[in-house]
Structures are given as C-alpha cells and as structure tokens.
Amino acid sequence: MVPSEKIIEVKQPTQTKNKLLTYFSKSINAYPLPKRFPFPFKYEPHPLCLMACKELQDYLKHQREWEHNFGLVVGKKGKIIGKMFGVLLVETEQKEIGYLAAFSGKLAGGNHHSKFVPPVFDGLEEGGFLNNGMAVLNQITKKIKTLEELAINSFDPKLVQLKKQRKNTSIALQEKLFDHYHFLNQAGEKKSLRAIFKNTIHKNPPSGAGECAAPKLLQYAFQHKMKPLSIAEFWWGQSPKSDYWKHTNYYPVCIGKCAPILAHMLSGIEVAEKPF
Image 1: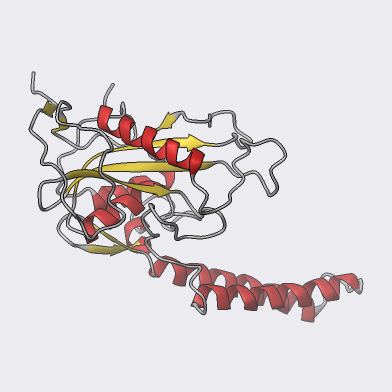
Image 2: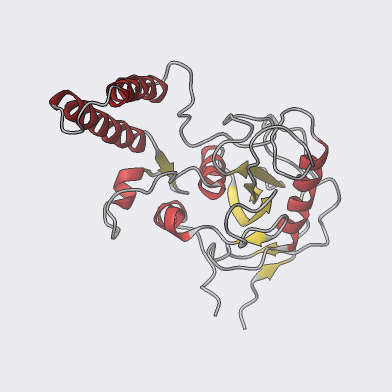
C-alpha cells in the first residue's frame, strides 16, 4: 500500500510580507502532511485542514470588521445568506506551512475583506465595465417597464426592440465578463473561462463560474508561488431552500461550476484517485 501522507518537521514560520497567509496558532509538527492533493469532488478533510477550518470558524464568530446576516443571530437585520467558506493548506517557497481562506461569491456585499483571498476577477470594481453595463441594462429595463405600464401591446415594435436590445446587451456583457476570468495552474499557464468550458457539454460557463472558494484559493496560491497541499470547504449559516447545506458541515467542491476549471488549475499536480 502506498502511503498517502508523510510526516516531516514543519519549518517554524518567520515574518512574511503576505498578509493573507495564515500560520497555525498551535504547533503542527506532530501532524503528517498530505502526499497528494485530495480528489476535490469526494474526500475526507485532512486534519490540518480541519484545524484551519476551526480557526476560521472562530474568526467568523468573533470578527467585527464587517456585517453579514448568516441567519445565526435572531432578529439580525438584512437578508439571510448562508455562505460556503474554504481553506487551502499550502507550502511556501521557504518551506513554511500555512493556509489561505476564501468565501464563495460576495461577502457583506463586497469582494475584498482582510484574511480572505481576492476574487479571480473583480466585477464590482468602481468604474468597471460590469457596473457600467449593468447601469445600461437597468435603463433599458426602466423603459420597458414604463411602456408596459402604459398597457402597450406586447407586440408593439418599440417594446419588442427594447426587449431584444436588453437580451443582446445582457449576452454581450456576460461574454465579456467570462473573457476577463483567467485561471492559472502550477506551470503559470493561463486559460480563460470560456476557453475552459468550450469543450464541455454546455459549451458556455454557467452563471457564477469562477466565483467559488476553490478557484479563488488556487489562483492566489499560484500567483504567490505557493504549493497547494489540501483543501476543505464548509457551510456557514442557515440553509437555503435545500436542506443539503448544514451549518459547519463539510462539503466537496461543486462539480457543475468547478470541475472544468479545476481540471486546468490542478494540471501537473499529483491528485489522489477518486475514492469509491
């Protein structure tokens, strides 16, 4: 049987310029490091990833930097939105061990928060094409609503033209957004989101592709010359419509949005075989 883990003496952390790399609060020298990256779509979280997740959960309980309603506090204002969080166990070029943290989508209405890696592409950037494009779409929608309130026939040429314009503008904006997502792998090779999904069944990326925690974590690791060792994701907050999501439970990486992306990003990295 080939051992899946190796025990090494972990180098003690030194001062680092990378503020998003978190070192463990306790010694981890007694823990074995993974020999291979886990099969991301079905795995048992590594003990060090579990430790990292517990530290992150403790941070979520006590931080006061931002406000987000996870539905865990009775009477808290704002829409209840549970969130998937992830940690990536990494090894730096200096052979130090630590972890990165990420959240899926947006958190507290934003993309950037201390302790968490940034998005692969920031569509919320002020003055960016996405915000400008959304403003144009909103203007078209207002015109459509005004005409509909006047009880104009749905086949009215002006209304038909506006709806066609809105659809074409929306498609063009979505395609431009996809083209701005470029994912790295260990070798530094970049690939756009549309190129990644080109040979899949659906051909086009699904909405929200690239916004999950796993791609964010791997992207940041590769950008900063860190070696990914293992990953774990957990749900934080109330469950949405499906009872599948449970507070603090661990989950594999999603297949629909992430499988094609991770096929590129994990290229060249030894990944464990799919467990039975």
